[in-house]
Length: 304
Ligand code: CP
Image 1: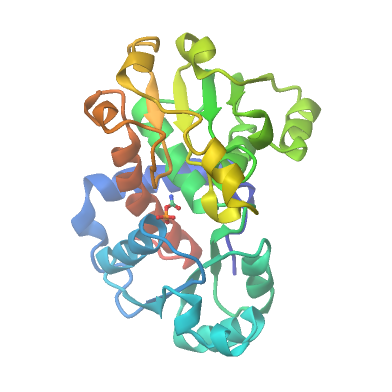
Image 2: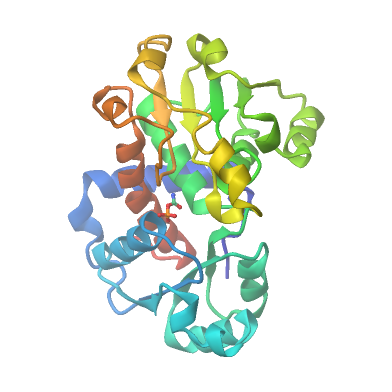
């Protein structure tokens, strides 16, 4: 039995197979419409979500399966003090696979260690968000045509943004990628990420001004400032609008640069940018359904 805790849990060949499957599901949805008949997905979300939870639910429903779960810790017995370990022991009797989001780093890993069914980390605190990374990689591979040889700018809250940590980790296995980390001083990418890049001799730079690097980018991965991870409101208010991508800044970008964002967006991309053909973030969210369908089939070892 396999779980997904970290994007590195799948090797590059396994990821290629997963993305081929996701692309096939997009092209031939009817072929997969009954692949999970009789199967149940549990979505255990101890933190708010729109895309991750609903795309998992959509994925299982489109595969013919059913979904149970909770979207708020307070509506589960966590509110009475039940541990994640006990919860997953129970869920193991009710469902065939579980997607779990939790504010505490490592909680889905604890669940996986006690689980009798595959557990998918749907985001743990400021740590990892592997299914967002799968979504990001599928989007890049499908829209850019490859997963190597490009310059990617990651902009915004690089300190608390778990999607950034997961994505850099995953991309570090592909050749000839140059990372540009764009953030205010207070929200710099953690040292453990840059240490990993140094160890692998992968080139990166850290800058504060987005405008300075815009013309160099093949891809720009924008992120919101993570309000829920700040200890004080004052710091959040000071930093939340540090970057706003607008049509004026887009004039500095390459004609085919992709704009990615895991969403939700707050203010960091002006809505006028949505009509720019380079804006890929809504398509990216759509790819999240296909990649989660492929992931459910893979973890349940269902071949179609
Ligand atoms: N990208 C993402 O994780 O969005 P949600 O928080 O809405 O699930």
